[in-house]
Length: 374
Ligand code: IPM
Ligand code: MG
Image 1 (tube, rainbow, N blue to C red):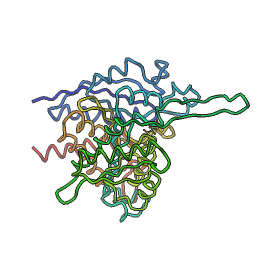
Image 2: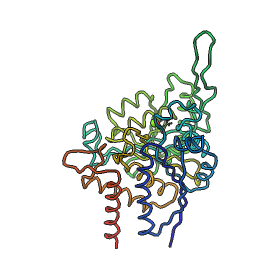
Image 3: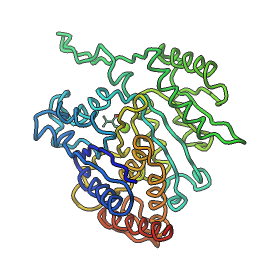
Image 4: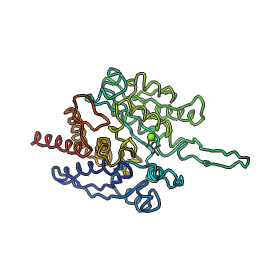
């Protein structure tokens, strides 16, 4: 039986192309060693797209993405585009992709691999076994709210405005994703738990968020546990006692901040994948949590694992290829256990390797799995 899938690959800027090369390696390997086959469309996003098309995401590229089962993205941005107009900056391409594809739920797992426990800046006993899933609302809030802009007040002063706005349907649909995932993560002995974070103490949009989450929970998800926390307290609790969290659901801006904080508990941004999902059955976008790291671009120092793990999430959530996803995740774990490290996660007694060699080590680990299965 052969399973064919259509993907769009958007390497983007900075380290994007070199980490995506390792994903391609994995894809090529899967094509020759499993029943999977892929049609890959490759295109530009971010600064690369701006340089080529004059816009950070062209309509043609967007159409290709919408027509695929999943999009695998590298990263966008770099200092050479710092002076480009706001609506043409690399980041605007990514925001357009999220908005136009209606990817309202951004899943950012923060998982501590045992082999990397010493890479965390926190004590091992605080982060051991950590497995948090942040569900960030991605198409609303202050990132997109109107009015926005910079206004000249004519008296030598200017006014910068952004608007935080949420409607009930936006809160409910991201809430459903979070509750549903918590339900699946729950066990016989321990219910799944959702921590909903906002600033209901100072923001009306936060008050609405809390009320709507409470109502949704009572109506559809009473088998899952729900608690609320102010977002600033959540930032503090993530550092103090992160294992109290299971699933965290929060808005676009708080999610941006809290997911970076949660990411660092694991020791390296270079390890963390993400999935951006819309309605069931629509294509998702999968990208590492880290940025384009222009300072190390092109030097073979980048860690490709977050992007490879993002591809694994695509297999799981968009392509329905759970088994292959698990195989890739196990290969990542295996490589880490062998002490193979890119510079960002380097530790004593480990072997430092380049981006390319990390990809090769991963293929080696997958080879072993196949042999074992045969
Ligand atoms: C992220 C990034 C983006 C965001 C930028 C690049 C627009 O920080 O995905 O977390 O703010 O959402
Ligand atoms: Mg961010």
